[in-house]
Length: 327
Picture 1 (tube, helix red, strand yellow):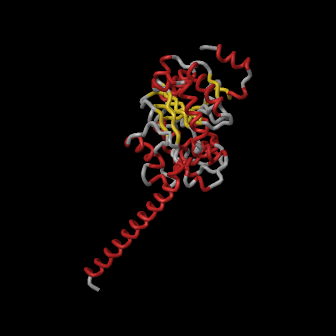
Picture 2 (cartoon, one colour):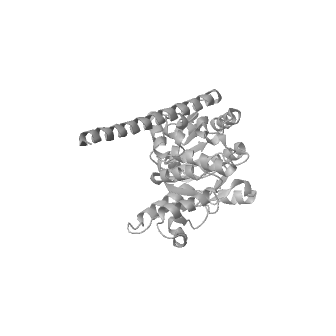
Picture 3 (cartoon, helix red, strand yellow):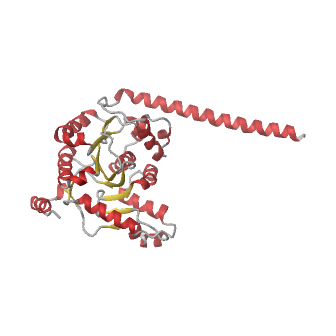
């Protein structure tokens, strides 16, 4: 057979394959739009601020899984966003409403975080409150409470409030999400929103009591560790200021997208701290499992003393001692 005929047949096959792939993508995108439209009537209506295209694109960059997040910006646009647009800070504190009794603990946690920061630290810090709820009867009282008790700090830009679009949880809504799975999905969204707003990101919860000047201690320790990095040896991925807890974990903002993707792949029924350990072992340490475990303290470094305590487990005398131990 003439080579020209073979060439034409070959190109025709390639073209048909290309068209088939494009049709499949178009059908899948249409399917996603239908699913989102089903959720439209349940959308939280109390929206005061809409993120711009640049901010939404930051979400898109870090979200690789699940596939429904790759088509359009709707699942990544918050249903509610209160923000003055503060960026380029040293520390971003992520405070999700994860614990029981979120309204009372959240108010006390925010109060203690702010009271234990100096005025200088407040100007160089952003607190992001993430309300991971779908029921607006739960969301609105929490938002109202923050607005009433922390109006000054909302206006100054110290506090952002973000609530995810309900379509973000699709297809998670199709599952019976355990508390651990829901926590991982929520933390992924929170970190995606916050990662580009500061040099370091600190994961907290809504029921922690910090030590005075905790921001200064964390920033100083992180900057010293950065300065001591040896370019020919593994560097730290996580600085731990509250061992054995979800809270108190400091990351470099620029490295969070890798962890966010990992969270969306392995979110089901795994403790968040175990997920981080697995991420370090499988992604950062390119050696055997045993040797990686031996080197875990290189990637996961712990501060000398805890800078946080769980609010619900702290006695009155401990609270008074911590609040009076200004350093």
